[in-house]
Image (cartoon, rainbow, N blue to C red):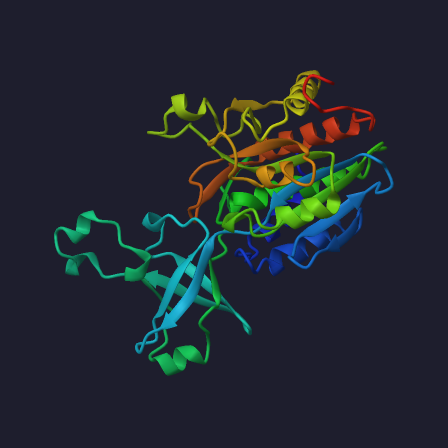
Length: 356
């Protein structure tokens, strides 16, 4: 079970505002949490890099992105309403009536996303999801002049912080994609700090994943790992109307998902499954949502002359919504699997398929 300190960090981390391109709050929390057990540095993009045993020849990189989807202010109307665009993969069905925070130079400004009331919609309009261009953010301003004293065009917007534990194991929060993955990276680094390592380990919190895997490119190039593990979220199929034939049988609380697709090195995948079996660590199998791409694994794998990579996904319900749900047991199993796998490395392993 996670310690009280770990759970307090999780809540603080989840409640950070970290839209793609402005991840400062999450970055500061991540670095502060690891500063007492690792060497910690940052790069110009905003990636955070924690290091253990840096002198070892074999370098292992862990990566979890802490940016989240959100919006950006594009225009302020005469009435003081804020027009906006998507920043990342927004599901427009989830947007109306969402409580948000605008991140201004002077701090957070609360608001709510509004649209035309159902009473005023034509019958045909009621059957069509509204476009983002037909919505606005209301901060309570009475005019454009008043609004412009508070917010500016270009300000980024996030869903209001809303972390909540539902029971001992499950929680909901905006931005679980992928702060839960970055949390697993941080917890793994803390666990490995207590072990005797024969490899160098770099625990990276990455930025701008939601807008094109942008943070993973420079951080992977800088670390130049031979082995890489990416922690992200994956779809569950334990809710109505998501077919298991598409993604497999994936449940909350049954362990992290190990994928088999082009992003995953065959040899490294075998090692993960061998360690999981040896230590009786729960895992789940899936082919993944895509044959390749979509997570920082793809960017890391193609760095320099190539990296042996593996994606571990934390099961997630209601992805890219304000109420993403995850299970702490899946995160715990992921930390244990990563810790035991990395601690078992001698630094002499080969991950070239057919030459291991």
